[in-house]
Image (cartoon, rainbow, N blue to C red):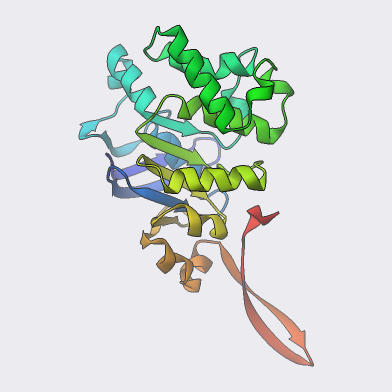
Amino acid sequence: MIELANLGYRWPDTGSCLAGLTLKIESGEKVVLLGANGCGKSTLLKLMNGLIFAESGELRWKGGTISRARLKQREFARAFRRENVLLFQHPEAMLFNPTVREEIAYSLRQLGTDDTDGIMASVEYWAAELGLSDVLEQAPFNLSGGQKQKVALACLLALDPQLLLLDEPSASLDPATVGWLVDTLVHSDKTIVVSTHSLSMAAELGERCIVLGCGGEILFDGPVHSALSDIGLLERAGLAHRHRHRHNGELHTHVHVHDWEKD
C-alpha cells in the first residue's frame, strides 16, 4: 500500500531529521511506530500523508510516486486525502468549524459526496460510536481535550479511509475510549500505522513494530513482542535507561522502562 525508498528529511529550524528510511507496509497491516519524543515519529507520519515532502528518496502510494505535482491533480488529491488520513497528536490543529456536527461533516462534503442525508447519517453514527451525540451542536473549541480528540477521530473514520495514520491517538482519551479505540483498530480490516512511546499501548495495538532511534534511523522492524522484550534495543531507542541506587550498602543497577502515557 505504501512504500518508503531511502527517504530523508530535515527540519530547517531544529535540525532534527529522518535518514535513509526504507520500508513497505502492505494492505491490512497493523504497524506500531515506537520511539522516544523527538525521534521523528510525527514527521514520518506527515511524510506518509503527503503533508510534507522528503528532501531525498521516494514515497510511493499503491505503486505510484507521491509528489507536490501529483497532489496538485484535483481528482487524485481528493481520492488520496479520503483514503490516506492522519490524526494529529494535538487535535486543535484539525478543528475549525462552528459545531461538532459541521466538523464531522466537513471532510465528507469536501471529498466527494453531495448526499446530504448520507452525510448526516454518517455524522450521527460516528458521534454515537465515540460518545459525542450530546455535543453535536457545541463548538469544538469549548470541548475538553479528550472530546476534541474524539471529534478529530470521528472526522477521519467518517471518510472510511484505507490507511489510518494515528499520532499518539490515546493522548487525552479516557480509559473507556482507549479500550474502544484498541478494539476498533485491532479488529479493523484497514491498514493502520500508530505512533506511540507507550510500550503498554504498543503491545495491544499492532503486530509489527518499527522502532526509530534518536537520530531518526530505523533500529528495528519486526514483531512487536520481539521489540518489547529486547531491553538493549529499548535503551538504544531512548525508551529505557539504566539507573543506579544503593540498597543495604551495595550499589545496584536496574533498567527502567519509560511509559509516559500510563498516567
